[in-house]
Length: 304
Image 1 (cartoon, rainbow, N blue to C red):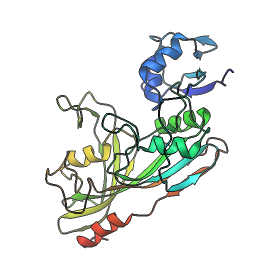
Image 2 (image 1 turned 30 degrees about the vertical axis):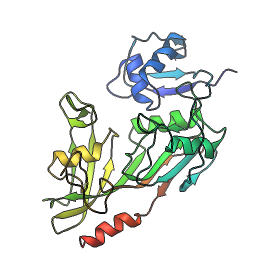
Image 3 (image 1 turned 45 degrees about the vertical axis):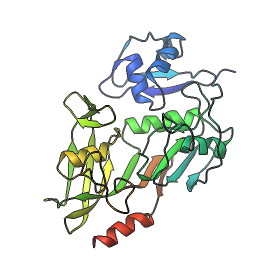
């Protein structure tokens, strides 16, 4: 069976085809993008592209995914708090402690295992494997909304929305210290830390990263604020707030090394997600109220 082709408009700043396509589709590895190019699955103006071809911003390429294969991950009946679901997408309110993807040290018991069980045959095959099409991620110790695609068309649509910044994500956070302004924007590129590969860092050669923040309340040396992601780099809010001198409460990686009693990690919750539905074109907003643990932090420190 031949799968349908999907358009992808190349974002700024363009570049080599395999790098640009894998960066544009969060679920697609660079090696998978190279295979697609080698197999003639990526065309521009009706002609297959080579992996080292240069693409310009605004170019529209057409992608024909390979027939996906089953993966060796076990579906697991893990309870999910489903905030929204239809035939194309599922939005889950993830609890603190649940890892999104299987990784060394977390081979199962992840959100992917739970979605494999929950979604059954409704899966995306972007990487050549049948699995939930998770186009963005949130850390294990961050709670809140995460969206996954249930087919390739939805996966590509959501990935494109991430690239053009039309997939809106709003977080609530508690940060250390008082802010001099009521709102602001952090624009600072982020890349993997040079020596500690488990951390990210602000670095001149990093990828563009933009975080907008707004103060909700400040009391007792702490600030409750909302953060809107314009880009979606790994640990972006945590890195950006630490960069401006206000690490998240409980963040032992980018802030104080001593854990905060009652907190599993950083005080961060993904509260709102707005996206354009891949089939209907309708703008949808899904919300997840502040969880009990977050409200307990606010109450403990007298924050609104």
